[in-house]
Length: 175
Image 1 (cartoon, rainbow, N blue to C red):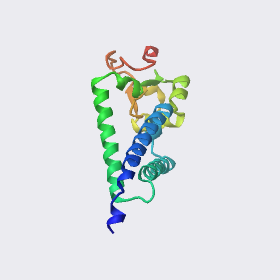
Image 2 (image 1 turned 120 degrees about the horizontal axis):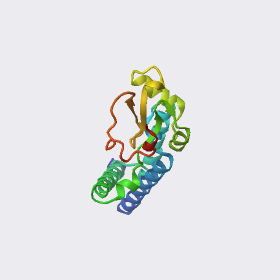
Image 3 (image 1 turned 90 degrees about the vertical axis):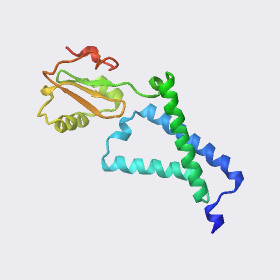
Image 4 (image 1 turned 90 degrees about the horizontal axis):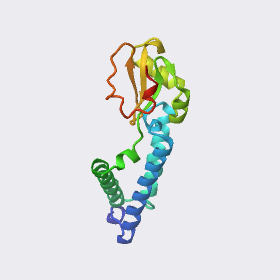
């Protein structure tokens, strides 16, 4: 039973390097495909996220998976997350790693180029309009895809503080 729970010392660096590789690979893929990939949760999206975890876990743990390998892998991932969080906070890396917010609807009009760039569909926009309790795009002064992948809505008629829109790509399109 001890052998199933423990790990051979020579496998420890392999688990650590695998965790680092999966973490960095995942961060690059999210940067390429956008955080929108992880934020909308249809049934197929949930399956993909579960598959990400399964593939990542399998690569990190190796064969045979053991409790010790799992703990080392989790510790490495948490350490990487803490390290990147610190880098984001104290350096300019956050701006390079995180996506900037993007305007996808301005004054009730879809912005197809921005939508295409951010992988936002008409269905995503209409869903966000309904969630905001609006019946049409006419009620949307601005819809912004946030770095988290969520869609924020500023309703028509609300005052716009330019500071709120400071880093939003395409904010100059608002009247």
